[in-house]
Image (tube, rainbow, N blue to C red; front, side, top):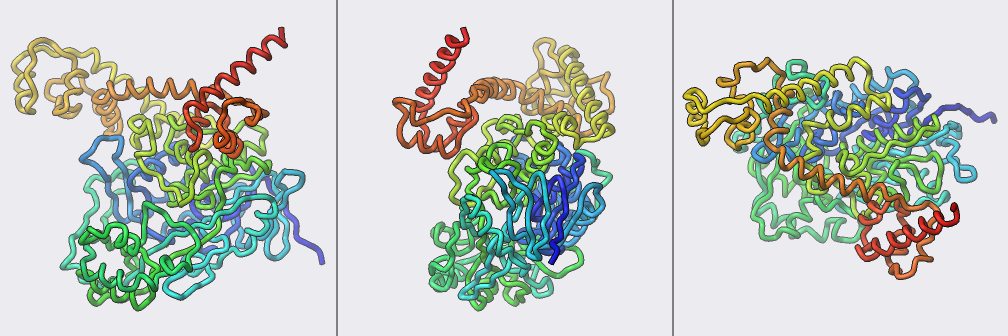
Length: 632
């Protein structure tokens, strides 16, 4: 029987958030690309929380957009509520989050894939990875068809050997009852890829008609809507928003859970995989935080045209009868009806230490990977990795150098560096605290940091780039004008300062100096700023932040200079760590496992001490001197 064979530049396995970004990037860069999904219903699926963004995750979405990715544009089209988190804190931790209409989000992303040139969306299960002499050659599907590719991106999400569990019920499916991918894991192992077993979970979905919202706290969206995509203005996406609701667990809820812990597969030993530390199940919360009398629960709509509500904060794998009991113990849920049970899901993923910073496998040329398959959690983390994997797969096909984002450039850089450098024995979640230079890596300036690169790569078109350059020029011009505009201690100025509870002037000051005062900002100086032009809000925001935090920003830039020096000290590819005297055995093992590209990366490996780094630097200096003498 003849076997179907087709030829592509890039083959993407999996059409979740990572796969979608990878395929779109590769295709938009001119590579003939095919993306596989086990089900068309799983394209850009949100199997868990119905939102995009949130603390630190909003930064990732903004960065994806600044580089030319799709997630920000898609959520701007399909959100039902928008909120800026952490507004009472500094701009470094402001994070945008939007509730999504799940079905609409998935359908619009699928429509985008199906209408992108050079891109084919295909429903089929990939069962084999084809590798010859250490180079990827393509994939084989369950039907036996072969799809040749110069590069392959693995973005299998939570589908590999997946099984869903609650109580003693074990269902061998992927999320939301969709088909699991049961055959690819064995092929990966045969090619020497190390797999981990991780797990995550999701709460029950409940019927809106059975909820008593009158005893809950209504959570409204922001009056001012901030778009995720830098291509959109507020007026482009403004809409009537849908409310969410806040309620709490109580002592009765906790008692029901404690009495049934032995029936949870988490505690009975049925679940093998490691779960996410920062998104625990309700069973874990009750055990780990035994002193807490209650936990927040957010009742969130899954969309405009469904009665399904998501119970945020109450993921579980307890049995069905216990789920009913504990949910009905919550205020407002006394008569609740469950539409879909809560469950835990186990799946295969890789040890990401097998990857280079480009997200290419170290031992298989042309094989890239992204998303939860790399041991991360979250839609946004997945999309960021997928975008870089797709870009680098396309550049591999074109014989171009890979794009590597470092920790001073982007949260995506922090994410990837953490994954491939550090030991991750649980699903990795992005947090603002993981970014050393977070004042520089704000979500509001993601375009300032990354749009030049997006244009250089080829994902930002000329029209968008020209608009960006004009925005940057206007910011710089306005900051310059404020630095050079002086006001005296006249009556008008003093009255404005007193009105804003600011200390009156004793001598002349620039407008820039006034803006730096904590109680003042650009907008409130309008009365004394006679030459001000009308500027967009996003320009005013950048002017405010750059002047107000100038000292802190300058200090962090100096720290980045030191960081860059360490990143530029490249470690020879052929180095033999076993030959380096005084390097501890643990350091030798860890350095061999990760094979860091620079001293900077080596210093971030757990188990490699500062003294090991000193030994390594001395050894590299000796090599340099030796080579210098030989060349002479």
